[in-house]
Image (tube, rainbow over all chains, first blue to last red; front, top):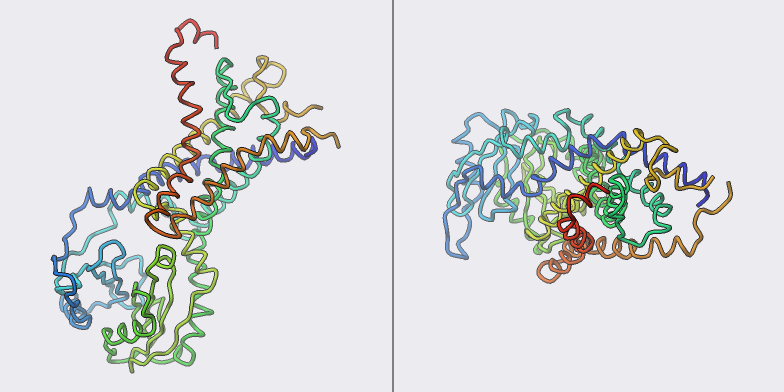
Length: 383
Length: 76
């Protein structure tokens, strides 16, 4: 690496960090409790539990439960039916005024899959974790907010990569992990910043990179709808909405028969964003740690109940689905969550020490600095 | 400006340990995706490696600082 090359990297590190630090601090602080959002929700909110049943009890007919949902919510439309990932035996019915209403305004009714009984309708909107989640994903600004945070994520990745490059000139006379403890605070904090930064590089790159991918989720879904879903529906994409829907119990049974090693995860009703105007789309997930993250859509005619098509998700949807656990850290039990939280705290330390070093550097211009407190990259490069 | 700040060998020695840590913790992130049980445990060890190293560096320093007298603290 030449001197002028290093100076350019130092410039990239300084400005990509300065532009994004405030937002990254917000993301780290809101992200920390979100790692434990399930535990926090359980602690703060009561949940009706499904009745205990002896193993092997056949679940209640889905059409029967749907009948009860319609009785409870007269005149309303059901958009989706989901099999709860975290609580087997619980069915989630997503209800709105119309089948094409904005899914963000859906009400979610929980039903016992084994008895068909209504459990409760939790209000997620005012929740502590929901507010944190909105701040973390779009700062209550919708898609522009998401894309803006994605841009901040890109600056974060640029800061990490440039940080790796400018790490070397600081380490010429230091051993790995050496903290010059007897020196002034800026030197000590510089050593901590460099040491912590370089040891958590892989984790920060993965969480930063997958965070950026997640900000594109809405766009990825749109691309999938316009290309893959349209192809799968074929001529059915112009079919009028059926006046009477075919049995969802039979539709799920038919799809299960096609995919014996997979489990249904979500059923999208005709007219919703994830289905056709006259077709159900049932998304199946695998039953291993990796494949349970991946989805396979099955299209069933909602008028005749006939199988129409099924295919694997394209690579870009798969990448998005895999990126979610890698961002949230919720895929390896409580110990991984705790490790995730500590790594998040380490990232906060790196951000704060970095900001401190920039301020300290401005207060003590070159030449006036105490001997040995040369902590700007420029001063480490011989002229 | 073509002067090399660092020779190739120094650069290699500076990045050797960080590269190993990045590789181990990066692969560890995938372990927990692949399977449960033993895979999860391997993932905790690998992803937690940087934290163990940070604790290893921090521990003697914090012990030293607690022993240091107020007078010696002023000097730094």
